[in-house]
Length: 412
Figure 1 (cartoon, rainbow, N blue to C red):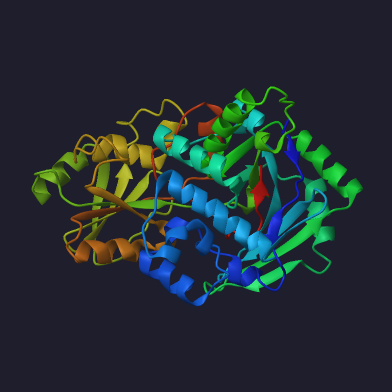
Figure 2 (figure 1 turned 90 degrees about the vertical axis):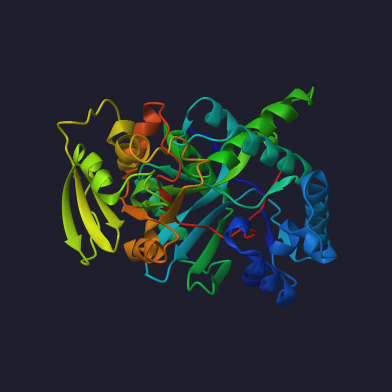
């Protein structure tokens, strides 16, 4: 049963939250990061990019210690404050398309991660897990929640609905035109009810943040080993998460862009492709797949629709039904010679929110030879793959919502 606990968040004061909050560090170009830090002394980027202060790139343990220093400075300057008692935090995002996401920020259990109460659907890289674990151990906080999803629950919906009737602690709009809201749940009876409702949930799924959750689990093992008085309720036994119901999760596809045809002519490539797909040339008509097992392809200035020949393909488990896996097994690996999707420099990815026209423009620029458009995976597919203990190929899903960093911080 899921252990989802309230915690005492460190967070910006109400007047500074829109200045502090940032997208994830990796989503900025170096120019964007510097521009924001040049004009905004309150940006959370100053904490996670401490080398800016010294006009120097800093990495490893030296960087981690400086991140810790910058974080403590923000607390000393009272840019951050900490709640006096454990709370749940309702976080709502309304994006520019007027899509709404509403969930609860809380502390999830690393024991649940270990015992598969919290299930995974993506592989993680060990070196990234260990690197982030060492980062967490030095800085002592986590500022970006893992996105978890759970089955829709009427009792939780009712609590959220009642809580959001009152004035929010935060309400701010970003330059992306997303509006963010945060409410604090501090009533002990409501907290107990929420904790009880979560405890009845048998399985929760990681939607986004596999490396962060894996690193938090490794951190627990390290700190547990070095603590002779370990009890199991210490803060390091949990990691900050944003839990939203499955019905509110939005999954987009990742389209594939390939730099060459692996030595094949266009005609040779199409003949090889014909073994697996019914191919129709759509010319300049933009084609986007409308259901699973259908793919779009853009090659040499023309769109093609590709329909999988199901009699030739063996559906043995939930992973083999995933379109990203189908494309890998029928095209990317056997025809185009791309065996390692993580390391091969001939393949790049464009998430489906950017639309298939982006794929066309990148191929037309001659940076890539061919592009493939996929149909997005469903929540049910993601769950089935996790339930069967299988792992999706890299870049199989682009999942929303995306939270801002620095709005709530979990200390351990």
